[in-house]
Every structure is written in C-alpha cells, then in structure tokens.
Length: 210
Image (cartoon, rainbow, N blue to C red; front, side):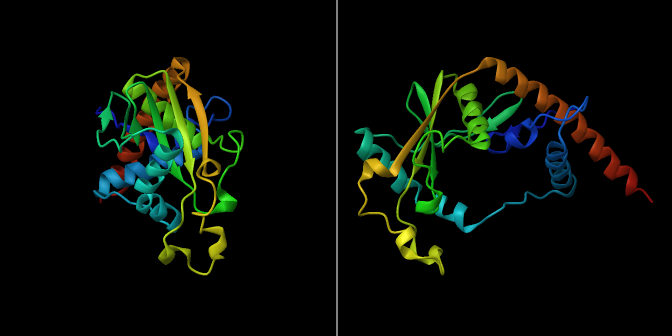
C-alpha cells in the first residue's frame, strides 16, 4: 500500500482524539473519506474564501510588516519538503526556526495576545514544519495588514484599514517548541488514516461494480 502523505495544513483534521477504542475520530474519518473520493475520481478540491484570498494577496505585505518590526530580512520560502508521513511548504525558514504567517481578516479576528492565538490547526501545521525542517522552534506570526478593498464587501472599512496603527501592535507571535512525542503520535495517526483510506477506496470500488 502506497502511503498517502498528509499536508501540514490538514493534519489537525486527523489528530483529534477519537472516542473509545477507535483509531480515528469522526472528523478524522470524514477527512479521510474526502481524500478517498478525490483519489478515486482524480480531482483536488481547492476550498477558497475571502479570508483565504486575503491571506494569499497580502502575504508579502505581512512578511514586510514582520521584517519592519523585528528588524529582519526574512523572505518567503518556496521549498516543499516531504517525509514518509507528511508534506508541507513553510512560509519562512530562518535557518534555525520556522515562522508561519497568518494574515488576519480584520481587527476583531486579530489575536492581541499569544494566549488568544493558540490554535490546534495552526499548531499541528507548525509542528509538521518543525519536523520536516528539523528545527527545535517555530512561531505562528499573526499579522494585521489592510485588507484589499475588493474583498471587504459590505463590512465596515474601519475594521480593515489598519495602516495608521503602530506596526508593533499589528504583530502577535505564538511560539512552540518541537515535541518528538507528538511527532510519533502524528506518525501513528497518519498510518491509521492510511489503513482507513484503503478500506474506503475498496468500498467505493465494490459498491460501483455492476
């Protein structure tokens, strides 16, 4: 069986602890079933939203903001790495740590403290990058930059126009330390997901044999 390598950005979907003696949670199974359908039918569903569109459009501005606050010269990473279980392309590799950029949608969605920025999806994504790049530390950098006008729609522009705010107040860093025990848990969960993936693919084939 060829091992399906999970994307760093989707790891959290299979990492939720299941109930009882199950190997995958209900949400984890749903994630695997979606992957099975894509593999059998040969498509890759790309989910898009105005929040994701902003993240893509302003990524360079967010990195520029980060550099202005930290007095650094970080650039966007373009290398994708893969091991036997996962695959991912981090935003910034400094040589000693990973920084993952999260461009927030608006002022109300911007976490102003590290505690507010704790997020399991982003944490597992960052842990995947630390594992792939073999570094001991990683940070999620929440950046608040002005939203492109065409994305704002009917929302109050004052919640999106932020250039007048001190740059230091528009960056929130959440730091994580590498944990190899969690990496072992990821390995086990990915392997369990692959077993279920094969079962679902076989089920699709059986139910469509006429």
